[in-house]
View (spheres, rainbow, N blue to C red):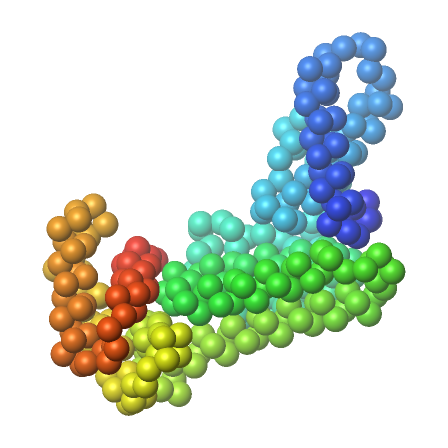
Length: 291
Protein backbone atom coordinates (compact mmCIF):
# COMPACT_ATOMS: atom_id res chain seq x y z
CA UNK A 1 0.00 0.00 0.00
CA UNK A 2 2.91 2.36 0.69
CA UNK A 3 4.35 1.67 -2.77
CA UNK A 4 0.92 2.32 -4.29
CA UNK A 5 0.67 5.62 -2.41
CA UNK A 6 4.13 6.73 -3.58
CA UNK A 7 3.03 6.28 -7.20
CA UNK A 8 -0.04 8.54 -6.92
CA UNK A 9 1.77 11.30 -8.85
CA UNK A 10 4.98 11.38 -10.86
CA UNK A 11 6.36 14.23 -8.70
CA UNK A 12 5.68 12.35 -5.46
CA UNK A 13 7.32 9.21 -6.82
CA UNK A 14 10.44 11.07 -7.97
CA UNK A 15 10.74 12.96 -4.67
CA UNK A 16 10.34 9.79 -2.62
CA UNK A 17 12.86 7.84 -4.71
CA UNK A 18 15.40 10.68 -4.47
CA UNK A 19 15.05 11.16 -0.71
CA UNK A 20 15.25 7.45 0.10
CA UNK A 21 18.32 7.17 -2.11
CA UNK A 22 19.92 9.87 0.05
CA UNK A 23 18.72 8.06 3.17
CA UNK A 24 20.39 4.87 1.95
CA UNK A 25 23.66 6.72 1.25
CA UNK A 26 23.66 8.08 4.80
CA UNK A 27 22.74 4.68 6.27
CA UNK A 28 25.58 3.00 4.36
CA UNK A 29 27.98 5.25 6.27
CA UNK A 30 26.32 4.92 9.68
CA UNK A 31 25.00 1.33 9.58
CA UNK A 32 27.52 0.03 12.12
CA UNK A 33 26.81 2.76 14.65
CA UNK A 34 25.24 1.71 17.95
CA UNK A 35 23.48 5.07 18.11
CA UNK A 36 20.91 3.82 15.58
CA UNK A 37 18.15 1.99 17.46
CA UNK A 38 16.49 -1.18 16.16
CA UNK A 39 13.27 0.76 15.67
CA UNK A 40 15.13 3.28 13.49
CA UNK A 41 16.76 0.45 11.50
CA UNK A 42 13.35 -1.12 10.90
CA UNK A 43 12.03 2.24 9.73
CA UNK A 44 14.98 2.69 7.34
CA UNK A 45 14.51 -0.86 6.02
CA UNK A 46 10.84 -0.14 5.48
CA UNK A 47 11.58 2.89 3.31
CA UNK A 48 14.25 0.95 1.39
CA UNK A 49 11.77 -1.88 0.85
CA UNK A 50 9.13 0.49 -0.53
CA UNK A 51 11.73 2.07 -2.80
CA UNK A 52 12.78 -1.40 -4.02
CA UNK A 53 9.20 -2.29 -4.91
CA UNK A 54 8.69 0.95 -6.86
CA UNK A 55 12.09 0.54 -8.50
CA UNK A 56 11.17 -2.97 -9.60
CA UNK A 57 7.86 -1.73 -11.01
CA UNK A 58 9.61 0.93 -13.07
CA UNK A 59 13.09 -0.46 -13.81
CA UNK A 60 12.63 -4.21 -13.56
CA UNK A 61 15.19 -5.03 -10.87
CA UNK A 62 15.00 -4.44 -7.12
CA UNK A 63 18.15 -3.04 -5.45
CA UNK A 64 19.02 -2.74 -1.77
CA UNK A 65 17.70 -6.16 -0.71
CA UNK A 66 21.14 -7.38 0.38
CA UNK A 67 21.12 -4.83 3.22
CA UNK A 68 17.67 -5.69 4.47
CA UNK A 69 16.81 -8.12 7.20
CA UNK A 70 14.96 -11.33 6.38
CA UNK A 71 11.62 -9.92 7.54
CA UNK A 72 11.79 -7.01 5.10
CA UNK A 73 12.98 -9.23 2.22
CA UNK A 74 9.95 -11.44 2.83
CA UNK A 75 7.75 -8.35 2.82
CA UNK A 76 9.02 -7.39 -0.64
CA UNK A 77 8.57 -10.94 -1.88
CA UNK A 78 4.98 -11.04 -0.59
CA UNK A 79 4.20 -7.62 -2.05
CA UNK A 80 5.32 -8.73 -5.49
CA UNK A 81 3.71 -12.15 -5.34
CA UNK A 82 0.33 -10.95 -6.64
CA UNK A 83 -0.99 -12.79 -9.68
CA UNK A 84 0.57 -11.25 -12.75
CA UNK A 85 3.35 -9.24 -11.10
CA UNK A 86 6.08 -11.87 -11.13
CA UNK A 87 5.05 -13.02 -14.61
CA UNK A 88 5.66 -9.56 -16.03
CA UNK A 89 9.01 -9.21 -14.28
CA UNK A 90 10.12 -12.48 -15.88
CA UNK A 91 9.88 -10.73 -19.26
CA UNK A 92 13.20 -9.05 -18.45
CA UNK A 93 14.88 -12.43 -17.89
CA UNK A 94 17.00 -13.65 -20.82
CA UNK A 95 15.87 -17.20 -20.11
CA UNK A 96 12.33 -16.20 -20.99
CA UNK A 97 13.00 -14.38 -24.26
CA UNK A 98 10.74 -16.76 -26.18
CA UNK A 99 7.72 -15.98 -23.98
CA UNK A 100 4.70 -14.87 -26.00
CA UNK A 101 4.05 -11.43 -24.54
CA UNK A 102 0.82 -11.17 -26.53
CA UNK A 103 -0.68 -14.10 -24.65
CA UNK A 104 -4.03 -12.90 -23.26
CA UNK A 105 -3.18 -14.75 -20.04
CA UNK A 106 -0.81 -11.91 -19.08
CA UNK A 107 -3.53 -9.28 -19.28
CA UNK A 108 -5.85 -11.54 -17.31
CA UNK A 109 -3.30 -11.82 -14.51
CA UNK A 110 -2.66 -8.08 -14.43
CA UNK A 111 -6.40 -7.45 -14.35
CA UNK A 112 -6.57 -9.23 -10.97
CA UNK A 113 -4.32 -6.61 -9.36
CA UNK A 114 -6.43 -4.21 -7.30
CA UNK A 115 -3.86 -1.42 -6.86
CA UNK A 116 -4.47 0.93 -9.84
CA UNK A 117 -1.07 2.68 -9.99
CA UNK A 118 0.78 -0.61 -9.64
CA UNK A 119 -1.37 -2.11 -12.40
CA UNK A 120 -0.57 0.86 -14.66
CA UNK A 121 3.18 0.42 -14.09
CA UNK A 122 2.96 -3.27 -14.96
CA UNK A 123 0.98 -2.54 -18.13
CA UNK A 124 3.60 0.05 -19.11
CA UNK A 125 6.32 -2.57 -18.67
CA UNK A 126 4.39 -5.10 -20.74
CA UNK A 127 3.72 -2.62 -23.54
CA UNK A 128 7.30 -1.28 -23.50
CA UNK A 129 8.66 -4.82 -23.83
CA UNK A 130 6.25 -5.60 -26.68
CA UNK A 131 7.25 -2.41 -28.53
CA UNK A 132 10.96 -3.05 -27.95
CA UNK A 133 10.70 -6.53 -29.48
CA UNK A 134 8.58 -5.27 -32.40
CA UNK A 135 11.07 -2.48 -33.15
CA UNK A 136 13.86 -5.03 -33.65
CA UNK A 137 12.17 -6.03 -36.91
CA UNK A 138 9.97 -3.08 -37.86
CA UNK A 139 11.82 0.10 -36.93
CA UNK A 140 9.39 2.71 -38.26
CA UNK A 141 6.26 1.18 -36.73
CA UNK A 142 8.14 0.54 -33.49
CA UNK A 143 9.04 4.23 -33.29
CA UNK A 144 5.42 5.13 -34.03
CA UNK A 145 4.13 3.00 -31.16
CA UNK A 146 6.89 4.28 -28.83
CA UNK A 147 5.74 7.85 -29.50
CA UNK A 148 2.10 6.93 -28.87
CA UNK A 149 3.05 5.31 -25.58
CA UNK A 150 5.15 8.31 -24.56
CA UNK A 151 2.18 10.62 -25.18
CA UNK A 152 -0.01 8.40 -23.00
CA UNK A 153 2.54 8.40 -20.16
CA UNK A 154 2.95 12.18 -20.35
CA UNK A 155 -0.83 12.58 -20.26
CA UNK A 156 -0.95 10.36 -17.15
CA UNK A 157 1.92 12.16 -15.41
CA UNK A 158 0.56 15.63 -16.19
CA UNK A 159 -3.06 15.03 -15.13
CA UNK A 160 -4.68 17.68 -12.95
CA UNK A 161 -4.32 17.46 -9.19
CA UNK A 162 -8.08 17.04 -8.86
CA UNK A 163 -7.85 13.90 -11.03
CA UNK A 164 -4.96 12.26 -9.17
CA UNK A 165 -7.11 10.05 -6.96
CA UNK A 166 -10.16 9.64 -9.20
CA UNK A 167 -10.56 5.94 -9.96
CA UNK A 168 -12.30 6.56 -13.30
CA UNK A 169 -9.30 8.58 -14.55
CA UNK A 170 -6.94 5.72 -13.65
CA UNK A 171 -9.32 3.21 -15.25
CA UNK A 172 -9.43 5.29 -18.45
CA UNK A 173 -5.65 5.39 -18.59
CA UNK A 174 -5.47 1.63 -18.00
CA UNK A 175 -7.93 1.10 -20.86
CA UNK A 176 -5.87 3.36 -23.16
CA UNK A 177 -2.71 1.33 -22.50
CA UNK A 178 -4.58 -1.92 -23.16
CA UNK A 179 -6.05 -0.45 -26.38
CA UNK A 180 -2.56 0.49 -27.57
CA UNK A 181 -1.35 -2.99 -26.64
CA UNK A 182 -4.10 -4.54 -28.80
CA UNK A 183 -3.36 -2.08 -31.62
CA UNK A 184 0.27 -3.22 -31.57
CA UNK A 185 -0.84 -6.85 -31.64
CA UNK A 186 -3.09 -6.13 -34.64
CA UNK A 187 -0.28 -4.29 -36.43
CA UNK A 188 2.10 -7.16 -35.72
CA UNK A 189 -0.29 -9.52 -37.53
CA UNK A 190 -1.24 -7.15 -40.39
CA UNK A 191 1.26 -8.71 -42.84
CA UNK A 192 -1.26 -11.49 -43.50
CA UNK A 193 -3.58 -9.06 -45.28
CA UNK A 194 -0.85 -8.16 -47.78
CA UNK A 195 0.25 -11.72 -48.54
CA UNK A 196 3.78 -11.12 -47.26
CA UNK A 197 5.63 -12.24 -44.13
CA UNK A 198 6.27 -10.29 -40.91
CA UNK A 199 9.79 -9.21 -41.90
CA UNK A 200 8.78 -8.18 -45.44
CA UNK A 201 6.04 -6.04 -43.89
CA UNK A 202 8.74 -4.03 -42.08
CA UNK A 203 10.24 -3.01 -45.42
CA UNK A 204 6.81 -2.43 -46.93
CA UNK A 205 6.01 -0.02 -44.06
CA UNK A 206 9.13 2.09 -44.55
CA UNK A 207 8.69 2.19 -48.33
CA UNK A 208 5.01 3.15 -47.93
CA UNK A 209 5.76 5.76 -45.23
CA UNK A 210 8.31 7.46 -47.50
CA UNK A 211 5.75 7.88 -50.29
CA UNK A 212 3.62 9.85 -47.84
CA UNK A 213 6.46 11.77 -46.23
CA UNK A 214 8.00 12.92 -49.51
CA UNK A 215 4.70 13.15 -51.41
CA UNK A 216 5.16 10.81 -54.35
CA UNK A 217 3.02 8.00 -55.71
CA UNK A 218 4.05 4.39 -56.10
CA UNK A 219 1.57 1.56 -56.84
CA UNK A 220 0.83 -0.63 -53.86
CA UNK A 221 1.33 -3.90 -55.74
CA UNK A 222 4.80 -2.72 -56.76
CA UNK A 223 5.54 -1.79 -53.15
CA UNK A 224 4.73 -5.34 -52.08
CA UNK A 225 7.01 -6.80 -54.75
CA UNK A 226 9.79 -4.36 -53.88
CA UNK A 227 9.51 -5.02 -50.15
CA UNK A 228 10.06 -8.75 -50.78
CA UNK A 229 13.14 -8.10 -52.89
CA UNK A 230 14.62 -5.57 -50.46
CA UNK A 231 14.18 -8.06 -47.63
CA UNK A 232 15.90 -10.78 -49.70
CA UNK A 233 18.92 -8.54 -50.27
CA UNK A 234 19.19 -7.44 -46.63
CA UNK A 235 18.63 -10.99 -45.39
CA UNK A 236 21.61 -12.41 -47.30
CA UNK A 237 23.65 -13.68 -44.34
CA UNK A 238 26.42 -15.22 -46.43
CA UNK A 239 27.16 -12.13 -48.47
CA UNK A 240 27.04 -9.56 -45.68
CA UNK A 241 28.36 -11.62 -42.77
CA UNK A 242 30.62 -8.95 -41.22
CA UNK A 243 28.55 -5.95 -42.25
CA UNK A 244 28.53 -4.45 -38.72
CA UNK A 245 32.34 -4.61 -38.36
CA UNK A 246 33.46 -3.79 -41.90
CA UNK A 247 32.60 -0.52 -43.60
CA UNK A 248 33.32 -1.94 -47.08
CA UNK A 249 30.66 -4.65 -46.65
CA UNK A 250 28.20 -2.11 -45.25
CA UNK A 251 28.90 0.09 -48.30
CA UNK A 252 28.34 -2.91 -50.57
CA UNK A 253 24.96 -3.56 -48.94
CA UNK A 254 23.96 0.06 -49.46
CA UNK A 255 25.11 -0.03 -53.09
CA UNK A 256 23.12 -3.21 -53.76
CA UNK A 257 20.02 -1.65 -52.25
CA UNK A 258 20.40 1.52 -54.34
CA UNK A 259 20.75 -0.58 -57.51
CA UNK A 260 17.67 -2.63 -56.60
CA UNK A 261 15.61 0.47 -55.84
CA UNK A 262 16.72 2.07 -59.12
CA UNK A 263 15.68 -1.05 -61.06
CA UNK A 264 12.21 -0.62 -59.57
CA UNK A 265 12.18 3.15 -60.17
CA UNK A 266 11.93 3.86 -56.46
CA UNK A 267 11.75 6.63 -55.51
CA UNK A 268 10.44 8.34 -58.65
CA UNK A 269 11.74 11.64 -57.22
CA UNK A 270 15.28 12.81 -56.54
CA UNK A 271 15.49 12.65 -52.73
CA UNK A 272 18.63 11.31 -51.06
CA UNK A 273 16.84 11.30 -47.69
CA UNK A 274 14.71 8.40 -48.93
CA UNK A 275 17.77 6.15 -49.20
CA UNK A 276 18.97 7.18 -45.75
CA UNK A 277 15.75 6.04 -44.07
CA UNK A 278 15.67 2.76 -45.97
CA UNK A 279 19.29 2.10 -44.92
CA UNK A 280 18.33 2.76 -41.29
CA UNK A 281 15.60 0.11 -41.48
CA UNK A 282 18.00 -2.30 -43.24
CA UNK A 283 20.70 -1.80 -40.59
CA UNK A 284 18.14 -2.18 -37.78
CA UNK A 285 16.98 -5.45 -39.34
CA UNK A 286 20.53 -6.77 -39.73
CA UNK A 287 21.43 -5.77 -36.17
CA UNK A 288 18.72 -7.93 -34.62
CA UNK A 289 18.67 -10.69 -37.22
CA UNK A 290 19.95 -13.27 -34.75
CA UNK A 291 17.18 -12.59 -32.22
